[in-house]
Length: 465
Image 1: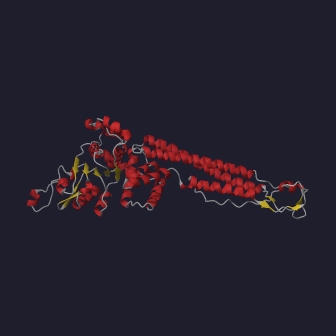
Image 2: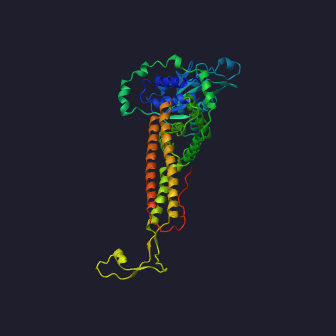
Image 3: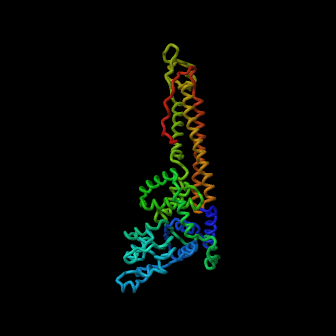
């Protein structure tokens, strides 16, 4: 792939976004899906620029044919696939004239796509997935790069769900916000928009080259582990993601990396997953919450788990500070005392001190015991410092990725950075608490002579390396 390919894509995206208000993420995901040979479903009310997105997308590709159709419950196959050939019928063949219709389109926009009957949807299933159209007794190859569907809502019938799964990207589209309303009224770019410059447009050879580069990319083990963890998390929501969809998701992540000029997908590419996995805005928000909280923070050094470890040392210190031993004199008998004990227990009447038995005293510890505790905490501090360094590297990597990536969502990136910053602050605080516990063990009362006994290890969960 030419080294200026990401630069061209950035210029194409800037051109596609011109005059559109609050549609940056929609434009970028539509283009990324098209580069991956996948399809996008726009879910939202009329008048939210859904058809405009599709019309603009087709201008990205050189010599691309565009097809657009609004479906109703009365739509017939001829509207999408072309009229029957009279000449073929005279020869006892059932074939259609497809020129100018969906089977010969490069980019297609199908509005109210779920209003079509099951016969149309079943034909569309094959066309979208295999890029083939059953025309008479044979199958016709279709040059479709990407289709954009639009709907107000998604049906729950079996055929509708199967067709819904063919759209890898599902984008809820809403009206512009109050903040964007003035810009919407002032924008003249939609009416005057003429498309990107011809020199920026992509041809079939470039798409094929991008696909070859994406196919050669291997997934990092860390990324695969997070995907597996997310798949398990989906079972608790519940949210069903088909095996076919997981394969397509991984392909799109490879294309995202290749189009950015990167050798492999990054952990932060997974911030695209809400729109690739969940079917609606509410469940996409749940996926986004999980990703923002999880990415860059391994379970082994999550603040909650580290807190339990530090609390274990703090609890052990308090137990050792409060521990008592029986106190014996040189002859091996429990000690007796008078004035010293009277001062300890306080004689409110000021009477003379009477000899009383001292049965316990504050426990004292040998150097071996204290040094063993210090060694345990020092090992913990080394690991905490390693976690802090790792979080710092993740924050640096995320900032660099956000500057370079064409596809990242700004809001989710900010949330992930906030979580990393919060985690870093929590880890630093836990390091301070661990150092305070270390100082507490150093201040334990000492025996005059070391007993040579090492303490039992502090019980806590093992931390993964």
